[in-house]
Image (cartoon, rainbow, N blue to C red):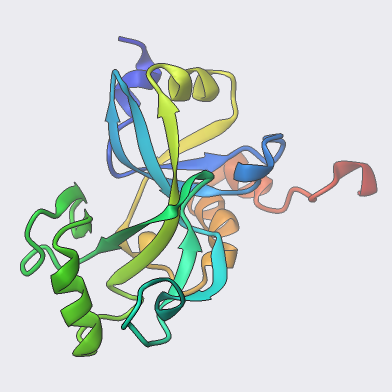
Amino acid sequence: MSETSSQLAPGVLLVAHPMLGDPNFRRSVVLICEHSPDGSFGLILNRPLDLELGDVVDGLAGDDLLSLGGPVQQDTLHFLHRHDDVLEGAIPVMEGVHWGGDFEMVKTLVWAEQASPRDLRFFLGYAGWSGGQLEEEVDEGGWFLTPATDDLVFSDAPQQLWRTVLRRMGGEYALLANFPDDPRMN
């Protein structure tokens, strides 16, 4: 097992290198929710959409905004939450953060206004990698790895998340937080 493989795990953030060329992941922060030799599943945390939950789920009104979870199967809905005590089937990602669970109960929480973006986030699509693919991308320098924290996962400023995470990482990473979008224009 490579060193990269042992570092990749649920609860780790993938932080895109400023020069990562794939437009799907430009300056993205991805929470790894599942990782095994067969592949990886993650959700992009910093791609808010101009859609509300009620726009994609019949019968659910509210101002819960959706995010683009990734380029794969953008017609699927995923959610991260802090409600493992009431959502059966939730998968632990890290301390205080769970993925999925009983969607009927999620609807009940939303209807009863017992959930907010600070403890329940919705995503259309996901980021996925086949076995070994993500390790290769990390080894090639496309991603930085850092442990996630629940305040980053449920950030109320997702548009600033890439810079925020790099600054928290400190050192040379903090310097990259100010890397220009187009270095030729510097």
